[in-house]
Length: 64
Image (tube, rainbow, N blue to C red):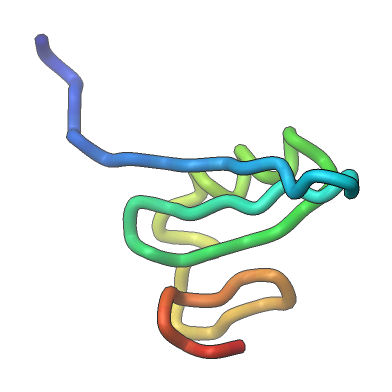
């Protein structure tokens, strides 16, 4: 099938909250309450996925 990249995006809802936790195929993580904001962040490559990590955007293993 043409157009498939094998990239995996994951969004989990944090039970008991209005918070969504997203993990991008690149390993970056992000939290947001708005699903549209979350998907915009997920699909923003390369914008939003630079080495500078705004609040809620943490590369896997950064410990923050």
